[in-house]
Length: 313
Image (tube, rainbow, N blue to C red; front, side):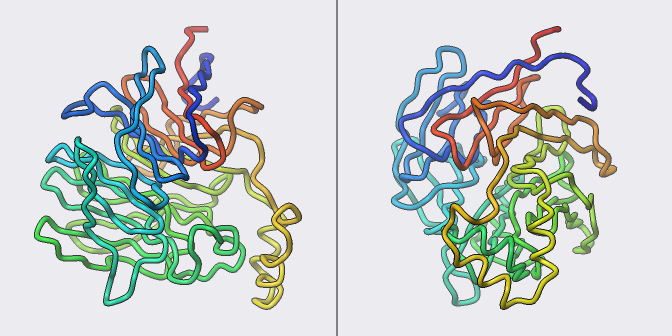
């Protein structure tokens, strides 16, 4: 199990609705001590990590994905349908970004926030919305983008041509940003000081989704599903074939496997932690947040969040 040679216990915390795609642990502000997540019905929930109690924070009216805490105490929400939102402690919702270059964002996905309030965020595709995420993986449109919003509201495209831009994490020293390319099974690094881009890690064991910087300073990466030879074969095929496959009934399309896997990388791009288990209780991990030795998990397909804790065994 990579850097963890001891047993990790999995605790699942049920929610009233499905698709708790990401999680964030609040270490200050109005949500201090709570875990936050968003579900497919547009609801943002708080969770008490001790009692497993839950409560509603707000409703976005869209489909919340990536979550981050902002320096002003508000919750940053990447809403796949509505764009980049800020949610206040009273449930008020402000739209920060919904258009880029005069065009509506199609698939706002994940973000990271610098100490000065600069937001780095991903737009997964300019072709497919979230409801057709499988088509984005198979068709390999390479229209994903990494963007930046400065505190004065200016939005800049930093990197384009990404293969399903997904998770975004900012290094602990804020010198670089890592963005996951789900369809390419790799992580890219954008250096803040020079504006240059390079491969951070490629040939991942599966398809990365959300990523985050843990309290341990490592870049934590979800592996939503292991690599699929059928998907890789289709990606090498002609576009007409890839498009036809994405039009067949969903139950006949390649599906995520029932696994739980997350990895953690150092600033050198090398794996420092690798947690993997097969379980029927939770699967398709799409969100990860390491905090104080616990690893919180979200899932696009589960009506729950989960947490991995060292059992000491």
